[in-house]
Image (cartoon, rainbow over all chains, first blue to last red; front, side, top):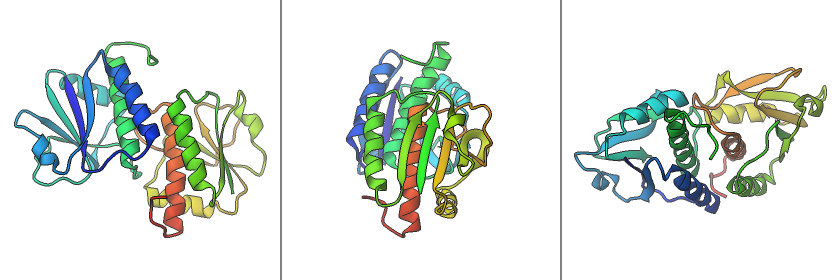
Length: 129
Length: 129
């Protein structure tokens, strides 16, 4: 299972990069995850990709429901999570995290953490590393 | 205006403390803000305190609505935001950030960022520092 989080914009803060590094380490046993800044996210997507968009009009999921979604996607090798506006992309599923607007940095850390939390839920493991 | 975010638990990650330091700096011109770990949050509260609780059953606010809430509280000198279970406390207002469960660290960074965002909205300032 490989998850790529893609945005046109770049991660702004050093503390965000530190958080990502920590969660990448914790996620090591479960999946490959990376953040990629791309001028044209559509180019990163293949026919096999399952494309999720973070969207204020998307579905609001509890963490357990998000974990269920991750569970269903386990056999999908290429999962893409798009943050921000993107043209010419077929979206498979939209998720809303909050009614509040968050900066890219926060959304990325929230996603890393929720994906880590999902695997801890799915493997019946205690939350902390 | 002074805002204290109070929880029984402590901030876990160094990257969270870095994020808080950055937002405290950015918030300097607007308000005093601090995070306090307290064994007994009720003891931190006085009769003058306005008490907000982060609660899954609270109101979901868009960032502009949250800014409106901050605006109304500007003359309140002691604002308390409680995270996690607390006994013997009168809650004035409950806010839900997301249907997802977030760790304390994430909730604190989200609050610092949303409070900063609120002041940028209220002062018609561009978002970035």
